[in-house]
Length: 74
Image (cartoon, rainbow, N blue to C red; front, side, top):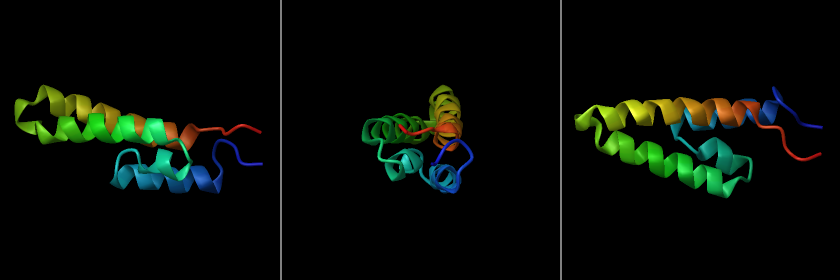
């Protein structure tokens, strides 16, 4: 049984730390992975506008926490 705090979730959180959405992809959640990657990547791309960069930072942190706290279907 793998739940919150399992080794898989730790690995997924580490993956999301480096590339937003990669942790969700490792967990098999493709839609969440694409959304986190696109929103965060777009925000970081427009970092010069400041607000998108702040939003991207929030989504990046959210993707890490989401990957760490994910509890799959038992």
